[in-house]
Image 1 (cartoon, rainbow, N blue to C red):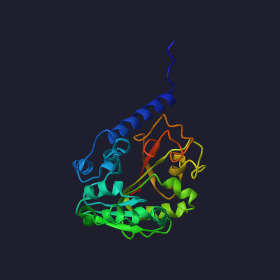
Image 2: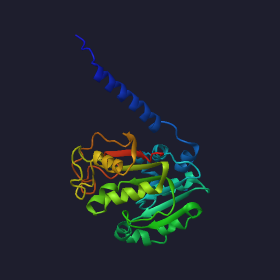
Image 3: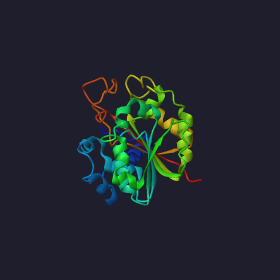
Image 4: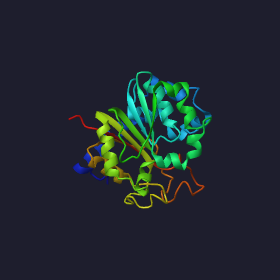
Length: 263
């Protein structure tokens, strides 16, 4: 006998359908010509374009909502994988702040001091000279100096835990820097639900709900919890740095879009 669906189950099914429909609109379409052109640019290095298959940069940029003329903050930008794309999307009238904390610069000093192949070379490239500003500063004390339209932090939020960053202060600074209606995107390696901040130093992962709770606590609203970079085969109980089964682009990753409310 077919079981009759109760009202709560019907509502749950409706909400699931509604969420899935909205999610697909963000991940499978609505990629602007500017974003597609930036991702397809022949000037991007082969080393970076090879990562596109698992990073899906066009869809990520679409979710973030980047447009020409925007000011965007690329937090813990590393070598500038996303900075390069952002620079091309925002164009001559926009600006990208390529931020790195001292920890990253010091730990990977060889790259950041390599005038030919490292960060200096990119900062001096014709593209970055148009609209990219270099910034080095601690995440919990940094003064970003301008009001920004959008920000993103990729694969680093978990590191702020074991590094002892004051995350409440960090999130508040970022919240204050973003314009009302602006967006903040966090991508990170997912830990098992309920793990909280355990094993962030050994597994380099964090519980998605912990990230959501901490961002909501300073005033952000969760606008999208996307499965774009999910990997159901990832057991989420090991570190990609110490296990040959995967690498940093094959883990199960959360993609969380937050919005600063317009008051």
